[in-house]
Image 1: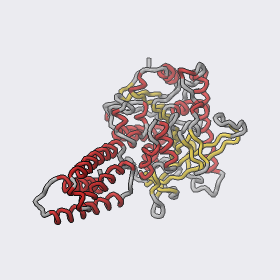
Image 2 (image 1 turned 45 degrees about the vertical axis):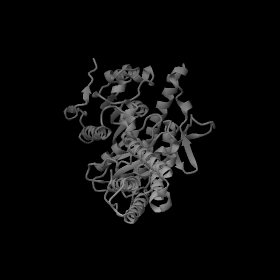
Image 3 (image 1 turned 180 degrees about the vertical axis):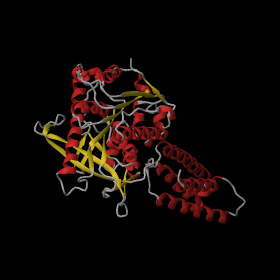
Image 4 (image 1 turned 135 degrees about the horizontal axis):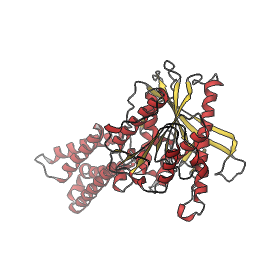
Length: 465
């Protein structure tokens, strides 16, 4: 809780105190103090912006102001009691809303570099779009880059969810919440500076590509992106169109989630055919992204990234569908040198793809939720045929969604079972540390990525026979 928030609630409770209890002060003095407190309380609500969580608190402020500003009302006992009861109820419900949907600060990156960020829209004319009605549409998606910078003075910190309410309302609706309920997230600041120039001193920089899961968004892995960028990586988050809840090309050009891309398993006999197409689409987005980075690095003199990207050292982070896409991509694109997969969904890969040896180091993390399920047999198959070191660790006490920034949205996620027993901010520290250690070892030092999990008691190694 911030100082201003603490003052808000304190002043509101002081006003409630003056409205309910008798005090030794003279009525006139008491009323003037209460009026002053009501003005201060209103200013405290205005100074940091008004969010839906505080609407009922503002209603309570209005009701209490009636009691302390308009003298005749105080002489009408029944009306006075009604207003007081409504005020108490409104304050309580507002406090619950603030607890359930707080405004958190993003975890600060630990590296020595400041972080810049910029975005691009990519279109692959060689691929037709599977998920639109027009058969002539070609594949189009958005990427966001995070990178080291040493010049931030003229650049402001960008919002965590830079595409604003279009994305937050789509995310809320997709999770069966009223659309406005995540609006406050648009004012959460990231630690990245928009369009800041990339630092050149330690270049060229290794690349890490991040792919979100089905019905996700690229912002759900911004903590990993900023951490790696602060330690000298260029990180590329892909917004996989129609697998994301909303891809915002501009305010009048938005591609929303297409649920037909992955219909319900229990209602779809050929479900895995749909799944394979989705995972392969994600994987080809990764290839297109690497092609574009190559163009930025070599062919475009106007790009600030020209000559600063080390495309001979490329890692991939993926969650769920994005993790499966990373495995698929590494099998078909030899530019990918290391994989960090969180509940990677490899079940959609075909038998021939699963039989193809994975030739790059891989660190897979599995949630407690996925300890049992169809995906494990296929993941074990990928690992058993791998010609490089493949490691699997289970993070006990976690759900599938814990591998995202769910912790930034609501503590209710644990109450309703979306999040597990491990604190989300603690888990973010773990994932950031593990990914940095793994990519430093594989991409920078040229090793196999052997992990020492001893500092994280929640990690349990899974040995494949």
